[in-house]
Length: 250
Image 1 (tube, rainbow, N blue to C red):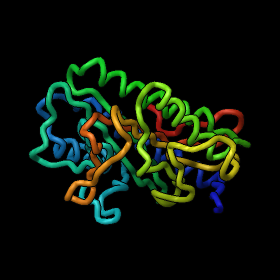
Image 2 (image 1 turned 30 degrees about the vertical axis):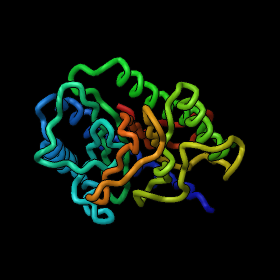
Image 3 (image 1 turned 90 degrees about the vertical axis):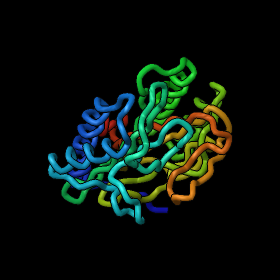
Image 4 (image 1 turned 180 degrees about the horizontal axis):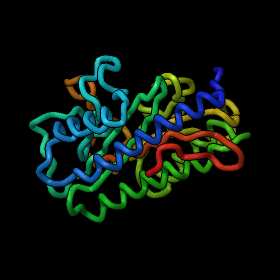
């Protein structure tokens, strides 16, 4: 497996796309509240993306019908926005946003509280966010892909949660999904070595119960098999120097 090393031009392009992706996420997150429909969030995202002279990365990708993914409560990833999907007090909502800017991609996800949520849901969200940053801290020049996967899995399972196996992180750049696939579970010190100039989208999905998921009849929405809550965080990062750069932080 050959992992692409990005040129200076490509790194600059991805950084710009990621900055715009983070801007959309920040502004969209302010619209999350009880009574809002996921379709209205999708429409707002399309307006914001167009305002930034970008295109949505997800719309039409392998037939996906919308510009963002909105996954509520037991929905793990790929929830499809719809006019009839109202956010309610106490829900948790995972937003997944991908943007294309001048042929370069940015990709990120985050889980948000809708109004007041339970302490258990807050802890799940915090664990998923910290699991992502734990994986990022292992994304160092000279480490292996297995070091990232192991760091994420260990952090999640040590706290009594499970890490989803079916979906993985990925390389990103001129394509939304590039080599390599990056599982959120595995053993340290195995797999390809990391080098400066690699760009990855790391994205742990953490379940409050079992790690298994089912796909709904819409062909996209993944839900927890045991109906437990799920949280999802994702950043696009650059392997560089002694510390990875998070390109989609806001």
